[in-house]
Image (cartoon, rainbow, N blue to C red; front, side, top):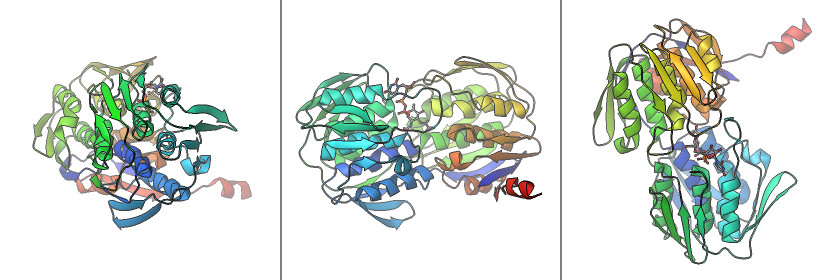
Length: 428
Ligand code: EPU
């Protein structure tokens, strides 16, 4: 086990290069299973969620060749298993995408129920509804989600909630189905568009990705392709928020500024100077953040995956801010950790009232989930003294080389081993 140790107080200065998007990568990798030929995937982030998915794909029979640090070649021609066990999925949310991908390829899938960050209830009823509408028989057997189909036929599906996962899973199952599938009230996130672009580059016929109505005309074959994953908007937003909380002047490169619009708008409201370039943004912050109200919403709204990071910035603001979570039932578990560092935050259901304090103080804290962990790093960078963050495996799921990247910006952050003292205590 490891933890992060951060000596706060250094302003951030310099350049940081953003990696490929986690939530695009975890959809595109299972999508490779639909191809009849090998595919080369570039700009893959080096994060543990990607490693877990690649291992699971190997267990299913895919052959994987590492070309370089960010590129793999995947040959799915010998995939012969349709079972993704609990051990293979390792509690990942994205394991659910194997349901759509394997159904699309083999008309059969048995997948351990998806895990992922704990935000209260995380149902997959809309995924199941979509698969059933396409003609699959869905059951739960021995704790596994089981899907079977004689054939998959295009249909019209209206999603009761805007769901990233259900939109992706239905696209995966429908891309080789007979006829036309229409997903209404579809999610519009950049990673949905990236998945559609990837599938289309293999010969799929998907229109409307990025709007609320996606039309998928099924094709018989998908061929090999070489595809580069989009930059991670949330990783970019996290470094931008860190530069606002800890102050400084950073250039965030390898980004698509259009994907960052809602984040940039709020950082400007908070008092930062943000300059957009073709594939980079510069963030400058010289003063205390201003208060600001934020409500998270599906894209193009303010992303829920930036909520803990921005709330941490606002915990240092001059005045009281209101942050409303509009996507998940419960995404404020990190607040308890932040209050250990002196933040003044009252949570009532889906709303947090944040009364800004002048400074945060160091404390031992935990990364209760992925983005909560990112928020703890931001708090530690801005705080006085030495902050220790435990349970950082959550952070490693989604942030590539986080210590190296923050260190290059002048932060004092280290990854150190945690020694389990329990056995010694028992002996004594
Ligand atoms: N929902 C349902 N039924 C469903 C599916 C979703 O009611 O069948 C509800 C959820 O309970 C939630 C809302 O719909 O209230 C949105 O859930 P969605 O399905 O969009 O979330 P997801 O696909 O499980 C992805 C990201 C999350 C991100 C959300 C929202 C991946 C692997 N995960 O989750 O990312 O928060 O979309 O944008 O793409 C993260 O990266 O830190 C992360 C948690």
